[in-house]
Image (tube, rainbow, N blue to C red):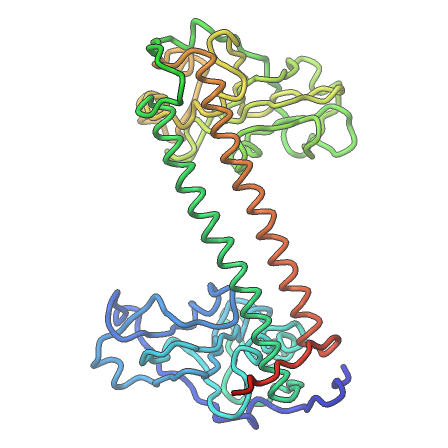
Length: 418
């Protein structure tokens, strides 16, 4: 690839001193002490720079380790694949720190560390690192391999401008991530308060009633088909238990969402799902998955059927409101009763009889509707923020692809006059 005009091709070795971190045993790592950067951390840092670490060592270990300072580039010297070997981050922390765990360090020079670290994680440089790596089961890259990598550098002023644009993009991403986490915590608190009656919505004072689910439910016949029997062309949609376990949303709009399909002849004996049906996965390998279910928000004209390892429950709408049923799985007494019944089994099972035997204290349908609306509003707010986050991440990726290759240029930031 040609070097952009006014950019200079340089090897990393010519930009500064290339050093190697000194090995630090896992048994040496502490939860407090002097910050220590180990190579595995570089693979979990999604940004191209780090100011803090999750690992620490005591002063005695630090005294015999390789110190790092602000502005150093840190490369992971080991990895599982050639595609990931040499993941890079600039250390921008102010505190004393040391490098261990097979890390290669590039120190010194006049480069902007955030710009250069971002460039070193770009596809063209990743390919160079892969060619310089060695090994099979565990892949390594050594200081000599890092030294020989060639990068195209713009003038320092342009490096600084690009680095600031990256920082601005990361600030937006981090702000959205914090906001999502805050909204999720608020929603979790709402779920715990509203579903247990510890907090009542305005206007509702009627006492809750105790019901046995089995007195108000019928079950829809399922059909057990393997993934191999499903397709993408048949008009009939098919709800597989695996798609319940891996799903984050508790509502399924089968009318518009992409789903596996089943030939009508294979699923002819199954019952058709309707709006408001609650479909459970009937088995889980861990307690967190017990009671996992989704409520059908809408169905296509071509139909949708419950599939392998599912239980499709159709509750009396005068007892359980549409939209509220999806939250049964978050009511502590509901999960506790299912877990007690499933205890002792190798795979934690949910059965029709288990569901039918559960007794719950629930509000009237009008309050259920209000609770469901409140929780759905909270979820929609979080989902809108997730969409914004994905757009921000995509914009950063596209921006970096253009700027780091010199295909577009930002106006240089002029120094302030005093």
